[in-house]
Image 1 (tube, helix red, strand yellow):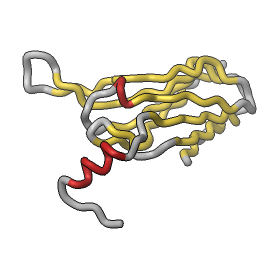
Image 2 (cartoon, rainbow, N blue to C red):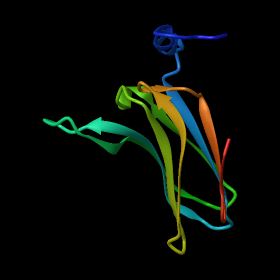
Image 3 (cartoon, rainbow, N blue to C red):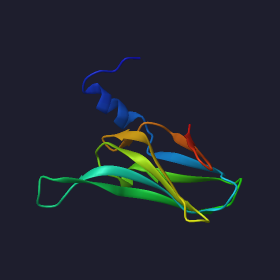
Length: 127
């Protein structure tokens, strides 16, 4: 199916997807703390024409023990009607920060139903 022009926005509105699930699998061998998934979007500063990148919503998973997989959910009703992406953030027991940006949303609409992140000692895999 090829969708072009303004019909694309109508298709996104009618698709009945108002949330996205984010699954995080801790394969680091240690506990991850402060596990959080953010929605990152450009937000207009009040009384200016300037925009700033901001976290417009988040789901906090908290601490994640080794070998545990946990799910968080983000909802469209909590975000701006602009393009954006997701950001994963966590700390290990030694204070090492794990962070990556992934995915995409357009005009405040999620394009996928879910994402899966596999956090390893030196890599974050995104499916």
